[in-house]
Amino acid sequence: MLKKNVPNLLTISRALAIPAIILSFYIENKYAGLITISIFVFACITDFFDGYLARAWKVQSKFGKLFDPIADKLIVVSTIIMLVYKHKINDFTIVPSIIIICREILVSGLREFLIATNVSLPVSKAGKIKTFLQMVAVVALIMNDYYMIQYTGAICLWVAAIITMWSGYNYILAGIK
Image 1 (cartoon, rainbow, N blue to C red):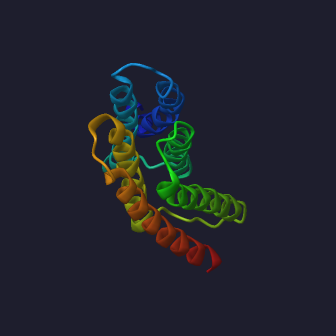
Image 2: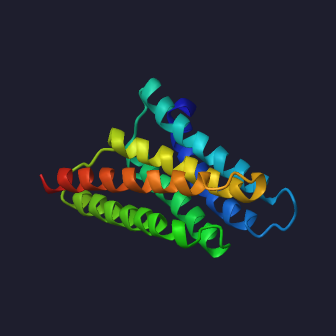
């Protein structure tokens, strides 16, 4: 019974990490960035393990299929919003941030619509790549201030935005079929 619930508990823990990530942006000491990165990376790791364990243990669930992508979107979007709020996303990176946020809202809405019509829109390979790249971009953006890796976060965010548009386009095509 426990085995069956572990993947879903990991998904829930990722969603529960969101308030901790948001609060970590308000910490004002030299370790603030490390705290934010640690919580965010923990959440990212749970994203890998919830799906991996569900498939390996053959305990995939409707809950996991629905809430895993929602937790992914919430963690990335809420962190991007905090990066904007804290002025870590600037003129050069605001456009890819808007692209990512709009795509996540659009695809989530499409998924909800399709669920109501009993049509499934499974997570695609492009969607998984998109999520990974978004998470890498967010970590790089947080690290920019703390480790002086100029432009790495911005470049990662632009690459993530391009893949985000591509995967969003693929989801829309799949949803229309």
